[in-house]
Length: 117
Length: 114
Image (cartoon, rainbow over all chains, first blue to last red; front, side):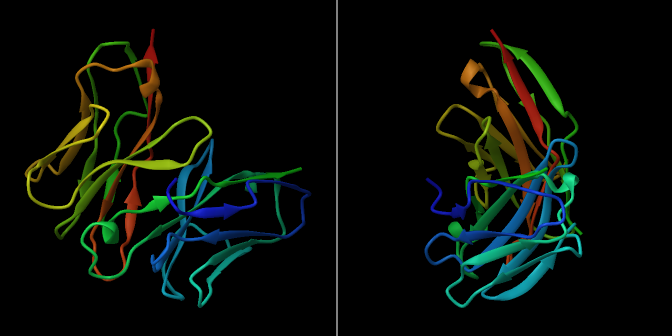
């Protein structure tokens, strides 16, 4: 158990709809990352938040948005869903600035399976 | 900008044979290096990591990786693979700092053949 919790584990929704994926990072971790994994694109970095602020942006579509709340949990919002958005979405977290060990290791959740039909 | 290259997308190997999964990185500063493993239908798990010190790092299940600064490589090796090692392996690099930006490779699927 990595300590990173993602909900829901599975989600089936229709095209055009909007969904929200939720992530609780490991206790004390300030950084949260979102990744998308699909068969054709592999593991794609979407976005990173650090202590509530956006720190890095990857291949995140404009239809997608994320935020990190004061309690450090994060949500990834996916809107106007298309068939191609079907994928496994991972949340990951890592520790505080200056941390020696956990500060440089990313811990992944089990992922949220999204199927768009 | 940092980047990671995993040259092999798939590596088939017979059980009990040795295996090497290759990883090369590029970065203009000192880096931290990681190998993650993803078993079927599971999330990514940390396998081993290099932060500093000895350039040879080992995992609890017999894998090892060696940081080679001159060749900018961090290849993963195991002298004798088991069926249970069948998984996808991801190399990752981080330049550290106050907020870590981690870049992952495209992954290598290790298929152990009985």
